[in-house]
Length: 248
Ligand code: PGA
Picture 1: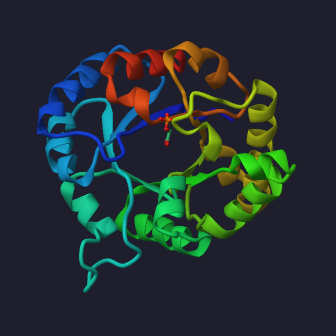
Picture 2: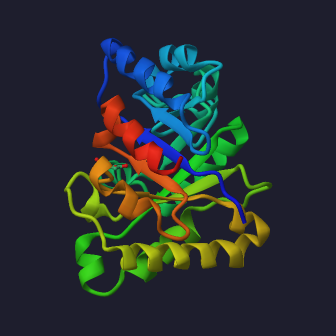
């Protein structure tokens, strides 16, 4: 089945108003792409401005987290509806930094994925094992449990994408070998197909963790790798576009 590759940049807690110039460069470069869909996920403070700048361009704008509920007494939180209202088209949920620093459980991540659907946003649901879990031979069961617990029941194939991000590969410069990525993505595909049928076949599975221009070709040409979730390298338009160029 044909799946349109998605290359999404997770800016994390980086970016000020002055970063709009970098977005402009990304928008200009995105016009050269024919195949890949490009997305930038800035901090919430920049969502509205970025969404306005990207309107009518091939670049989609996404957020990095959302609350489970639509509104209420939750100081400091932002709902999926608010993200949509600010111009977001997608939201990352269950990133390992949220799971680790904010104690997010699979059940919470699932609630956020459902909130994204309720608001009409694409959820990018992150899963991935730690180094210790991989070394102990538990990478698959860990990812399986995260998939089982975090994914929503979809109505159509635009509801979510999965990002496989081994925790130990994020920001470290280390990546799994091609064989390990191929094996995990095939496993995730098999789980998605078993649970969702055709929808599971059409769901994009992104790889994330230290994707750079230098390794993009090696990492993003593997079967069942339908694009990338890029952290550090997405902050520089030139590097981000070089990665996206691998997907066409
Ligand atoms: P990285 O981050 O590309 O800087 O390793 C990826 C991510 O956390 O999504």
